[in-house]
Amino acid sequence: MVLENPSLTNAAQRNLVVVRAGDNSLHRGWGADDRGCEFDLIVSYYGADPSLFRQPHENRVDYIGGKWDGIHALLTQRPELLDRYRYIWFPDDDLEADRATIEAMFSNMRRLDLHVAQPALTPDSYYSHLPFLRSKSFEFRLIDKVEVMAPCLRSDVACRMLPLFRDSMSGFGLDLLWTRLAEQNLGTSAVFDALPVRHTRPVGNHLATAMLKSGRTPEAEYRLLAVRYGFGEFFPLSYGAVDRKGRHWRSRSMIGLRMVADYFADRKHFRQASRLKKRLWSLLRRQWSRPVNLSQIELEP
Image 1 (tube, rainbow, N blue to C red):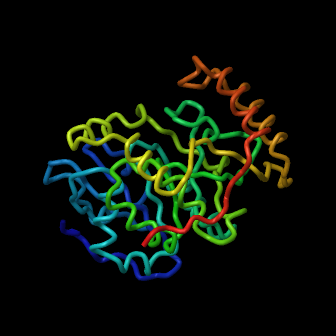
Image 2 (image 1 turned 90 degrees about the vertical axis):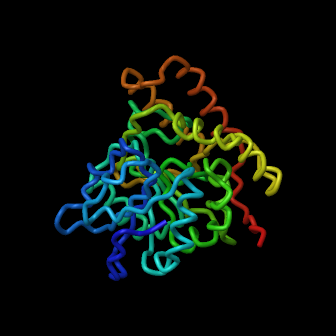
């Protein structure tokens, strides 16, 4: 694995985007080549075309494999990246986003002193978990889990998680760990409703095919970590929020009701609307009854 253009910035205020990219990656729409862009980009390429993604701002690195083992390979070869950057975004390559959204996400990570966060998904996105879709009433929601599709990690969190990346192609199960590494985890992870991105392809198609060739599945990776660290079902709970008028919401049930109202109002835009009513009821029931567990998890050496 060779980093083609290692001349990344040393400026402490800058941010880094690392995308695991195939031939049809959408990262060229993210504005990394714009003059004055406030983040650097590394394209970790898993395809086979030697001519792709050779622009100076793309900093291509080659690695065949899954998303998170590829990120592990990059960060172990270039550990100084974890010292150079305060926050690193790890998006999938099939997200439609723009420079303003990405830069605002990094700015809000700093402003709120978050450990882990992600942009929300637009209603017409392909999605796995309903609470990660944009709830248009809110600026952001404090949430107990951040999924593997587009997490932004503070560099010390990425450093602590790095050994677990090595044996994970899918990242399944990592998303129950990185929000629970500190002694106090309340208020340190969020989803940005006012900064949505669009997920353009069905979830996990390429990854599932690649993993089967290796004799692995995302579900097996999840079970391995679940047994190791004692967690159960993945369902994100929103336990705090700030709305578009700057008001703070602290009632989980009221946040859930507002989310359901927003999703129902946007139902015509939903790409996956066939089971929406059932999913809305499940969201409301869990927001009301499920406990939020952000107790510290000690990672094994």
